[in-house]
Length: 358
Image (cartoon, rainbow, N blue to C red; front, side):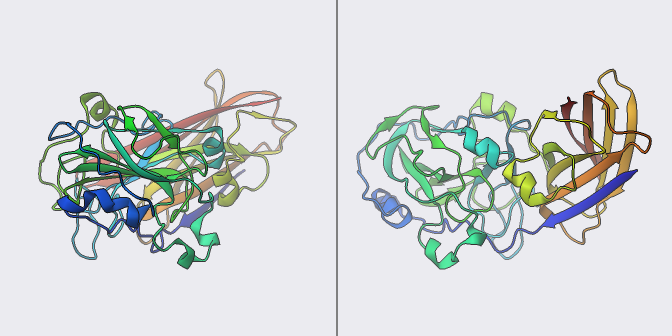
């Protein structure tokens, strides 16, 4: 017998609040608004354009994902740089999400994307889902813990939602590409652990994927370094945070990382495969397949997502029960695949995870 459940997690009205855009002459004062710190104003002989390296120590598509890009729509609508919908209204940066809080606690490094001078830091805000807080306490501190780096010639990057106490740089410090700035966290106006990276030029937000701040679908200058470009291909959706449970699971425990395991103590009557997805669309189909270590397919389940609009995050769980006996010891593999039909054809998004029952 197979059980399925879907929990749709709405985005809500979370705005990144990166709305302070200083003029070229005001760049030294940016942290007085964003991080509440004084700026150094130190001049830097850096290049007029940037080639950004990956700002997080992860493997895009495997251990981190981009659920939200810069919103290119100047009005109430939402458009990412491809004219897709992987953003939310007035979002001013690129979000690099990790799987869950367990991964966050292990530590994922935030890295400098380019050479520059640290303008200031904040390092003392707690890692808490903002929905558990009085939101008024976050006014002026929506970025949470983080830093701003001045790259010269009007360019700067801002790194938000870092882990409390993890910021590893000081105001006025020179950093090189790849230098550790801190750890991914859950501070500020956020409800999942991720790095929010904002790029600005002379105070205006710039999307590093096309070198523009508005108007999607226009081919611009990709500001990522060549090796980063190869890792950051556009994905309209993704399967992530695949795990296993032996009792009916729920999304809260999944996001804590309680199902993020490769080993379960037996005997097991029902084995649940849990997963999350970003960018779920109406009529997407989820296929969950469970097989043995030698490739024998035990069971497969296909379910159509019943949502009436795009969901930024979606939790799904499928349970597999052996009517005759409890699950025996051994290693099992769960394959999760999402299918989406569009005018351009059929998209497919895959994920896999193994578990050993002792």
